[in-house]
Length: 79
Image (cartoon, one colour):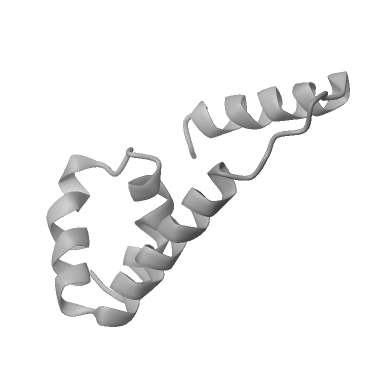
C-alpha cells in the first residue's frame, strides 16, 4: 500500500470502519512510513479537540435537518 491509498483510508480508520481485508496493508504502511503515522496522529488529535468544543445551547431546525442528511449520506453505500 502506498501513501495515497493509506491517506484515502484514514477516514475509515478514524470512524472504525476500515475493511478487515485492508487492515494488514494499512498497518504495514504506517509501520514503515513516519509521515503517514504523523498525519494520522494529527487527525486523531484534531478530532479529539473538536469533540471537546462546547456545543451551542440551541440549534435551529434547519441545522438538525442538515446534520441528519449528512449522517444518512455517510451510511449509504458508496459507489
